[in-house]
Length: 285
Image (cartoon, rainbow, N blue to C red; front, side, top):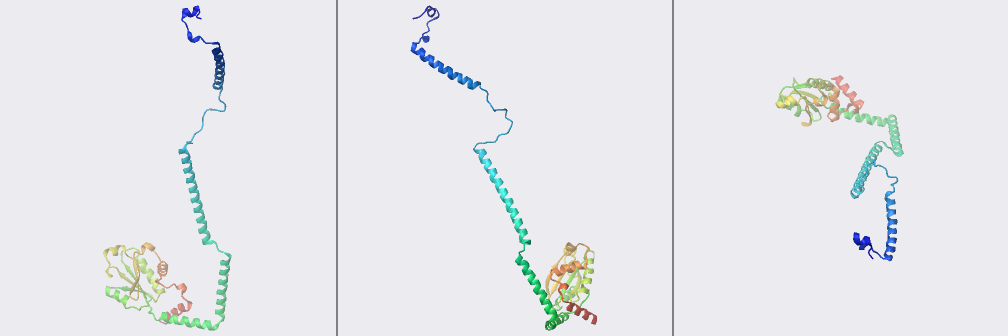
């Protein structure tokens, strides 16, 4: 039933509810209050262990995982390459220096056998006689070559061809092509004078580049040059020797160069009997 207040203020029908609805509302309200209270408590509770962010973060999503994996594979490949490089360096070092006990014993055995052969040769007169005979044959062959002992100047192209083509087939002919005003040519002439006295079985010649018919460009940039012939064939051709020796050099430098190229005999390998035989021939002449 509407009261006087309801009539004056207007009837509010939505306030009306049954007793059962009041109980339900009360129960629901208490539940809502409890839930609400819990929610308020949970919202009002301060967070524990969370402070201000001071570090850096990385992407932990799919892109971050892929990037980390790529970086890991890159580091793994670099580490493998470095290990392989170290392994190859060690292998190379060991292959050059490492010697087994068997190799050392083999070398000692070979050295011992060589010493025994030398002792046997020194004590055996037959071997000494055979060696002397072979040396005599080699000496006879060596003495059959003409003896020069000086540098032969070439004055024209006809003489140049004669010195090359009409010489003994066993004689090595070394021709120096020079120019008067070019550095290094004077030093080369002096070196060949010394070598001609030391290697008397080798023919040394010198010729001007103009007489040899060389081009103007060769006259400027090609001298001093060495042309080596044997049996009329060119076996060595070395131009602008100052690139090898510089402007000032010695006879030993030229000698070592020609010996290394097989154009002069290595006198350290010539038996003493042959060198002595040459000396005797020179004295007799």
